[in-house]
Image (cartoon, rainbow, N blue to C red; front, top):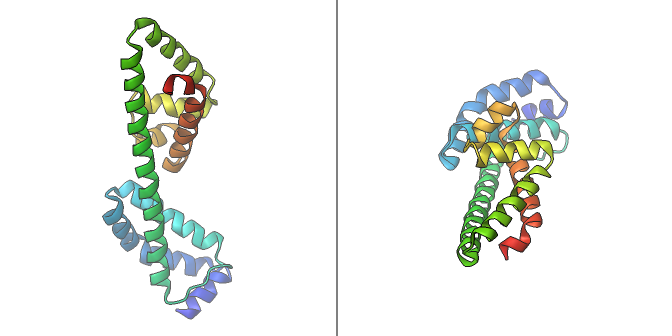
Length: 177
């Protein structure tokens, strides 16, 4: 084990490839058991392996490489789940707030103003954020579908959606209060 870690730290590509081939499938299965989605699990494990390679000179393996990899995957999965929980909570709050604004306004004019403001705000988003937002909210595509269509990673889709929602929240705050 110590030899493997030393070889990794020295940048041995064959050792890295051997570690990847040995642990990729079991780590994906473990991540999938936590995330309940094989696409997300594979993305998470790939990130762990990228980080392992990128930070190979800095890593400190206290027990075994196996334990290190499983702990890294576990932590990445928990971070993803936490992020997803925040996203779902925000989305729920946004829909609830939108419904309250709709109910309290009660007029077609207020709805028209909101629709116009929303269209202007969406139009002012950076191009990639706007594309991701429209594919998600108008075409109702999932993040993996958007990632595939735009040839970007699911994580990039999530980042663009977070940015788009943050910018829209800022631009539409008068309607959300």
